[in-house]
Length: 490
Image (tube, rainbow, N blue to C red; front, side, top):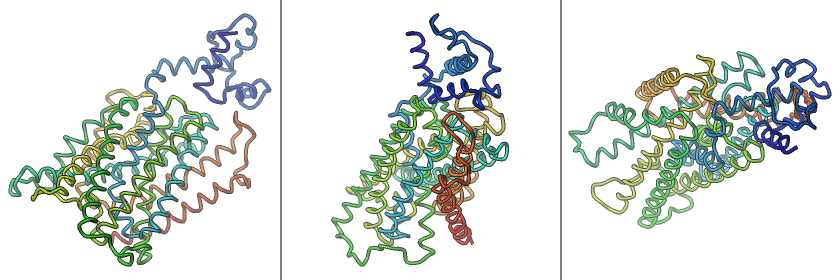
């Protein structure tokens, strides 16, 4: 029986819910009665003589085959621990988004901005886990577009590919623009004004040297150490921003309460900030990949990692956003680090500025590396029909896709170099669709399927009321935010 217990333990680790699936098959449920597992070829599995009838059936053989396949792919070796997953989530959240938080607060006001941050954190965290739950119900990978394909066929798959690629793509473009600002600041410390390269030359140089090389790292486990470096850079950046703001407040004094904007001045200002706040905490595309490639993918564990990561992100974003706004008020810039002081002259604030710019450069370079991952996975599925989550694509396919994405990002950044515009477009359109509209639709569709986790729930059931409300909220935000975003472009 020890062999049987070992085998059962392996199934629990690799396929949560297998026992219920097996019992349904034994009772003649749809997954067994229709021959879904019956056609699987028999393979040898560990068993004792007293359990021969139980372990020789085709259902168990199919599960054993799946475990062998996953091991052959190096599944255990490439999967992440909780710590590695948390670091990757933090790096994804704390990339370019933290730079625009103060400007968003300056548009919505402190109280309204803080409320929007809270709503965004809960909403994005909830739908990130909702996607994982739906994938578990239908038994598919959560890291790519497989769920959408199972629910809506090729149309669902293609739609998700487009949304994931465009969301990640605009994030990457914003990182190229922000990194150029940092690189320009650093170069100005060493080069006279006459020797400074043009903004276009500086963008191309920083893109080629700092952004492109890390994107060719393939394993998520290999990405984790670099993500840790990025996270530490973010902490240094936050510390320098806080120090700069504290120095400024000591020198100039805390502003009067009537000078601080507590609520938006107008509807237009409100809608300028709303998309940015929702975008800042949206990690549905890359976050799904991170959670799907963990060693422990139980819902309890993924919820724990998500809550811990979002708690840290919210704390840092709220402190930076509100403190920078209170310090600079109407002078608050779209890129927080442009408010930092750089030499000459060499003052304490200038030292803080130098360290902040260097930390931002490291943070953006490594965050870009993480953000490109879901874009590559989606495109490889669409073009080559390969699942990059388990590294099915060839090295040539992987390198070609990565190169095309990098070049497209540079071309777009050269054409659109305004961070605020990029934040608003991404937040108004792609964030609302990926975070608040599509996840509840896929979840309701998944619950309507007969599966190993229980009886189906009809789409129009009252049990789906919360999903309908979430979807309706997402559609409303999509309409009003997109309208304002398009109006702002004219």
